[in-house]
Image 1 (cartoon, protein in one colour):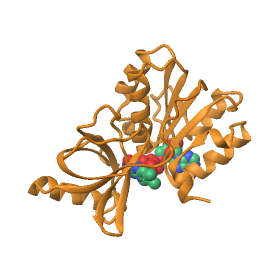
Image 2 (cartoon, rainbow, N blue to C red; image 1 turned 90 degrees about the vertical axis):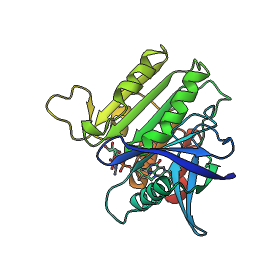
Image 3 (cartoon, helix red, strand yellow; image 1 turned 45 degrees about the horizontal axis):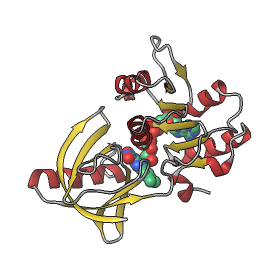
Image 4 (cartoon, rainbow, N blue to C red; image 1 turned 135 degrees about the vertical axis):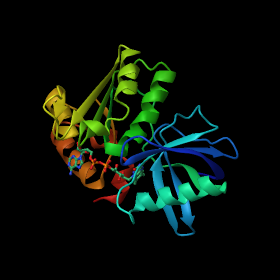
Amino acid sequence: MQTLKAEVVAISPLTEFVHKVILKPQQPVTFEAGQYMQLVLGEKDKRAFSIASRPSQCDAIELHIGASGADSYAMQSLEHLRNAHTTGQLVDIEAGLGISQLRLQCERPIILLAGGTGFSYAKSMADHLAEIKCDRPVLFYWGVKEESALYAHTEMQTWADSHKNFEFIPVVENPSANWQGHTGYVHKAVIQDIVSLAPYDIYMAGRFDMIGIVRDDFITHGAIRENMYADAFAFIK
Ligand SMILES: Cc1cc2nc3c(=O)[nH]c(=O)nc-3n(C[C@H](O)[C@H](O)[C@H](O)COP(=O)(O)OP(=O)(O)OC[C@H]3O[C@@H](n4cnc5c(N)ncnc54)[C@H](O)[C@@H]3O)c2cc1C
């Protein structure tokens, strides 16, 4: 783990509820694709956010923070970052955390499964896999409640179009009449598309209740527990 001070360079809306934050650490940051950082609000108050940028971007950290509700965990974090941005104060962060980073030592096909702002975790790995020209099959499923939450739809379609072994599958839980893609819960779309999950390495991020359900449903569908990665596992039964 690296303890750093960082400048808040920019905060911009991705949707009504999700904000992109760019931090510039005072020293180059070291992390692996799929790791997270903590924003230090107090000695015992540290807030976890996945790093959306890829490891080669060591001079900047991109975060996607989904914040709604005045007193929520994420909104308080965003307010802390906004204050620092306005006053020019540096924020304290701890980077390179987590044990669910991308494993590159094998040839197994990969599923990246993101629910909502869990996208941030999967995006770092997707961009890193593109950068190293990975030739393993990579399926990127991104589930959101409404189409308007697919803030990086075009970017991820471009990512998929750039490599014949990459595929991007957006899944909308409550679609409009115009939506032509998958619908419902994102992990149900995976189960519908893939006969058995036994061959896959599976990386996932999203709400804690989602991750518990996905773990159990995927194991029933053949996934091997040792090949499933989610930092949320540390927080749930
Ligand atoms: C290590 C760590 C890192 C984190 N990083 C971030 C971060 O970078 N940014 C951030 O904002 N928060 C982060 N969090 C907090 C948490 O992961 C988010 O609150 C969560 O991902 C937010 O999801 P959402 O509200 O956007 O999803 P929602 O909009 O509620 O759901 C999106 C999709 O997820 C699926 N889904 C949701 N609930 C269920 C369910 N019960 N069953 C099945 N599928 C379901 C569905 O497909 C749904 O459409 C982090 C937490 C930890 C522990």
